[in-house]
Length: 157
Image (cartoon, rainbow, N blue to C red; front, side, top):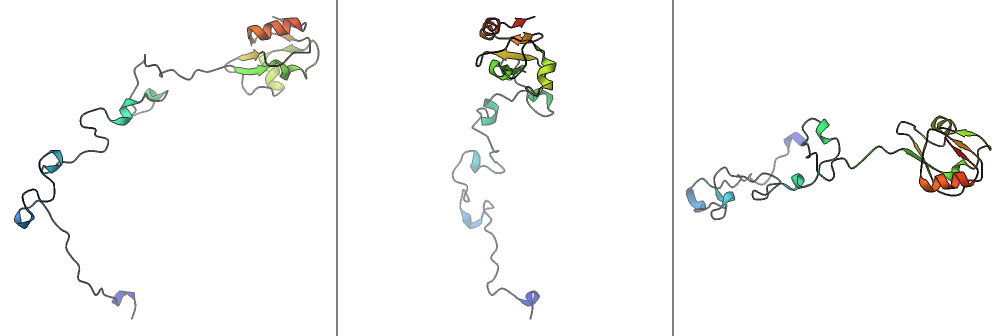
């Protein structure tokens, strides 16, 4: 004896078929009236009785218009251009390890490994104090950082 010879002791029961007349009554298990009581009717997933589907209510992510098949949000929507390319930020206290009089440009900061990319520019922020006299060129500098650089004897070109 093996698995191919084994048979069930219980007889198979056919599935209940409703909505075809006979002894199942008027509504045949579909309830009375309404959209789901009609023949061939079904409510699609996400349907909210004619209101917007839940995923249509929320703003789409940036760049949705560039991907095929995605709905494009309106240009003046408050979340349309939420993410902007920001310059690489570096604080003043990170520059205290450099030599006095050294010129600081985006290129030199990248070579020193203080920033990853110069694609969107570099901005010097006012975190900490500057104890060196440095020469800054080709950088964006915050107002407070500018004051601290000039106070320490540095030069901004």
